[in-house]
Length: 441
Image 1 (cartoon, rainbow, N blue to C red):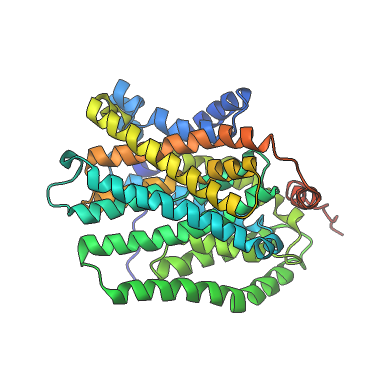
Image 2: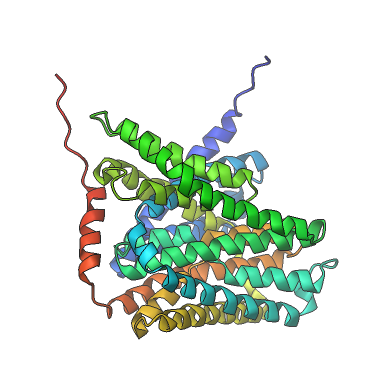
């Protein structure tokens, strides 16, 4: 077997500099955000914007291009680190889910999800049919563009929601749990719709492709429940026999990555599999949460900030200097934000939740983050978007992710905690308490 040559030293050097720069700036901006009573995610997202083409690339292009060379191998290296971060972040978020609440409030989450999906989807499709021709690449079909824009408007970013709720210590609240559950349903449907639109743009739409996607989605969930649950429980019980936390943490990471691998192999989004795996890990009695405290710390303070900063690197906000592009961006933002708020709020009120709970759900589900960036990149790769329309969609990701935390804080300050939430909080606080070490004999 011919040995594989290691990466060029320049690639490794630049990767180390990139990671150090993104982490350091993310930490500094996160601390500044905290002084303004904003979660760290705000600064971590802005770190990518500052070091990306929007600011550094505009002020000193040579410095920007030295830090982030236009080399596909270099880009893929950074993306690989970010991808591991997002999968583990979603897995940790899934492990924080209260499966008993999901079963008890499943109908509520379904209503919120349905409203938060259909209303923005319809508004986005309508906006796509009204968009000026300059935002459509020359050979893009208007129907395909409109459907794509509808998908871009209706998606929700579970990774960003998870980091926001964790930073704001709201994961134990009912609203936080409902936001995660409803957002995951929206994401699953959103990735399914994106696959349909992608098929329309490439090989055309066929009923067999749609049926296969639905079958894979339902089959994976059923398999996870019937087969995955006992396997996860058995693997973690075996790992827990060790007095050290290491085997348990390693097993959890393998389970999360395995779930992501399965859904990716089935042509679904990898984060969906990671989230489902996290839910299985967090089921009652499966694992001692204190053993996972070191993993949670590394994910939330190192891997997640890298992933969030790379999201900000994708956009070039300098194109907003064109008045027509700026107007289009404002209209898209208004439609997307209103649609998500209206849908989630109506779903919450239909489930007899309070006014402020409905607003909190709308605020949380409005965060689109890197999922929006991924959707935009798919559109750019398929030729559905050009560079200008890509930046407009990317701006939606950044603005909604930055506006979600303060709005969520405002709404949740008016929602009182109940007894179940207090018990859930005590349970989740174990994640921050490492297990006592057993002295070696």
